[in-house]
Image 1 (tube, rainbow, N blue to C red):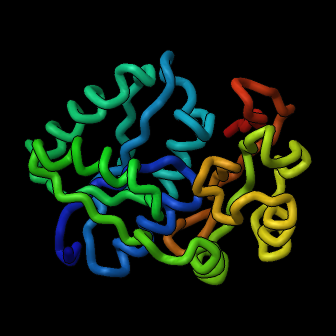
Image 2 (image 1 turned 180 degrees about the horizontal axis):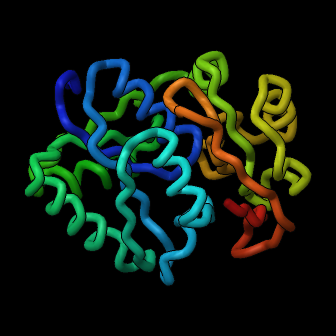
Image 3 (image 1 turned 120 degrees about the horizontal axis):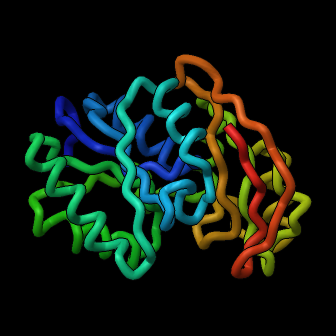
Length: 219
C-alpha cells in the first residue's frame, strides 16, 4: 500500500517504534494530519509507556503535528479507539500509520478496528528485522530514553538510559529482545530529524506496578 499524498494519523505512543513509523511514512510522502495517543483512565498518562500528557504535547509541538488523545480502560480501549477513527474518517483522514513489527495479534487487532470504518492501516516496520530497525532509528539521529522495563526481563537500572548500540547489546546480554517488541521495555523519544527542537524531560523516581518498573517522567 502506498501512503504518498495521503492524509494519515499516526498511532502515537511517544516511543521509538511509533516515531520510526511516522518518520518512514513522511519519507514516503504521506501527510501527517494527527497523532493519536490513548491515555489511561483519568487522562493524565499514556497507556503502556506511562508518559504524562505534557510530554506528549511537547513532542507534538516539536513535530508540528496536532495531538488527539482519548482516555479508556483496557476494557473500553477498542470501542473508544474506533470512535476516534470514525471522527478521523469524517475529516477525510482515512489512513493510519502503526509501529507494529511482527506480532500477528497486534496486526489483526489493527485490521479488525480499522477496516469496518474504512481506515487503511499502513505498517512501515512490518516484518523487518528487529535489530535493524533499532540501528536505522539510531543512525537517523533519533534519541530515546528507556522509561519502562518489564521486571522479569530487565533490571530497573536500565531506566533513564538513552538508547545506543552499546545499551542494545546489554539488553540482549540479559536475554531480552533488543527491540522490546514483546514489552521488555518502552521509551520516550526526545529528538530526531523530524523534531524542530529537542523535547526536554525530567526523570523522577522509579516505581513498580503490575510487573513493570516505570520511571516517573516529567515534562
